[in-house]
Length: 379
Image (cartoon, rainbow, N blue to C red; front, side, top):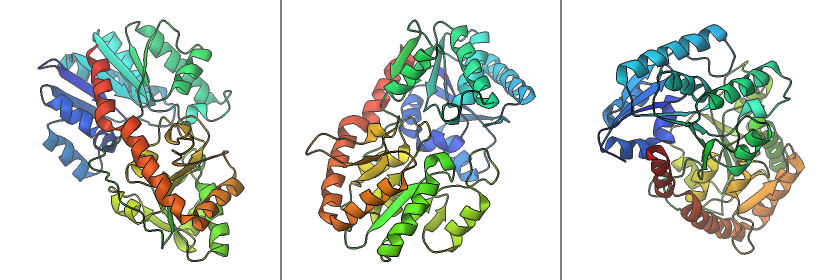
């Protein structure tokens, strides 16, 4: 990366700057000034970490999930003001709202090097296309991509690129790139041999329906009835009443009935992974490449996930190199079958876990992913 560049990174989650982009930002900060535009940061530890890294913060109000013309226009106007103040050399946005409105703002301010990363297509491409919210999101995405012919668009899997191409949201004239997810820090998430004497299945996810939380709970109920010694752990935040949240009745069961141990939101998943035998994510959400699965691979845990875009990228099916299982979405019975297979074949937990670590080293090493990202940003 050239020296003394001003780089703005815009996103909808400040924690992701540390958890997903931390190593990339550290590299950028070696010779450049990095600014971050995020929603208001409620966690003081997150703000402190970013400031200590040397990131200069701009916190703005943003409606992450809904469509509010007034709020979105206000957000765009404030981003324009920030860009005019900083005069950045590079603008890099990821997640939907910053990709749409951030790139529009950067284009209007004539920033020469504008980059947009889609970390999965998310809820807008997981539900019917005649839904008002999803229809507006797709139209705005198309508009922002066509506004700037020099915009670089970064995907985390080939299927997302192909879908946007098929829907004419992008064209073959767009500058597009595909990277292997956000990568995983293999020195931080170190391989640990799983304890096969105490089987524990873990899922890291927001408590929303499209992540497969309902199927995970249903499978846990079935397995616990037959194998009461097996432990299930669920970690992730819950927001009542949001578009895709599980209902409050199910949330109460998860917290109180003893089928699943619910940890809430945790910042360091490594201790939980060390105690676990496999990582589960029965998602039918439009993922990029799920971070929780990459962390599981790195620490030597088999993964059970769905044969859908984003998730399927984490499972190697080459004979002798298998590191987990792919199941159909919303198929609790298939999930139960694979869980029971690992319970009965504990040697496969170790074998698949080692294969998963090798797969992570080969494909998802954050150093390799960041090298690719740096080449894109400076191109």
